[in-house]
Image: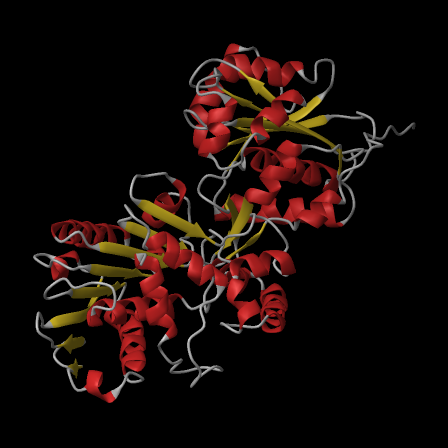
Length: 504
């Protein structure tokens, strides 16, 4: 009999201890069956599961811990199961599930089980080749040194402190290798693509099974289909119902800020930061700015520049305040290729599509040559009156030297991207759009940048533009904010009427 079949048979022999289905026999949902099949397949040493909160992660891991303790599919002597979590209290939750499932077992089995809550959380099972042990520990690598578990559950790995989490993970994995053990890494999504849990999910590796229930980024928070992807248990009586999820989504939308970010992170299983952030713009609000009937280039133009660091994108935006016309394009170096960049940034062939549409240029090799890029920036509006070139002051020295090199004579305005200048610029950008003054042709570059851009809000209510995810490219959005905010300032200044002549 296959190992996964033995595991599922044991799980179905248990009784649901709590919740709406308490007292009934355990029934595994399709996604739970799939995880068990993958985790206990031949040659798999590490199994990763990413799913929305409340979908039975802790319950499944507790059943697997109980089965390993009792030897339902393993006859290894002195089996050791470790439940590791960010804090002792978090580990206690999964440990309590184990104790609850064990309490539903026959009396003759329970007689051989000892449950200890002091000085540490342990469950001991005694038989002819025991004792066997379940231990709950916190994310302190030193607490796992010297252990040799046969099964380890890394609960909510996406929310462990980076340094301590990596130390504990390494200690557990090396301990598991002593006894051919298995690691189950289970969590909601981490807040960014560079977190170790995200890397487990994104990178192929031998002996690793990966199962991720994460919808496409930047969809509406109340989108039903994507809610079902992140919460597959809702269709099987596990966790929140779809009605409750939609109600919670509406509440998160109404509250905004960190409440919305936390809902996306925990309930939609998206990789977003749970601090006090909001979207720069809703995608629907941006799409209302797109038009096939673009107004003409009339009057002076404002140029917004966002120079990328090293291998990053550089972007420029042009705004004609008199008509509200906005244009933008970006630039990458030729190394690596656009296809490779797309894979690294998890956007597929999007950059290649932008290049074909003329929205993305290729310059230089690993970096975009600054002077060459600025010549093309100015050349794009040759013959136009440039009211101002607005730049991020972070690169003031480099950009200033390059502008002098190409002989620029237009006024240059330096703006910070922090709370001081950023709060005003973000507010002016939003107001310009909400008033219906901005008009832009369909642009994948700007759509993507606006979708990836978020606004971080400090306790005083000031805001600054930041990435919504670590690998997002928001350069075009930053350039547009700089250009539009300065254009709004220009439009708000009183018109100069000239001097008066009196005849006497």
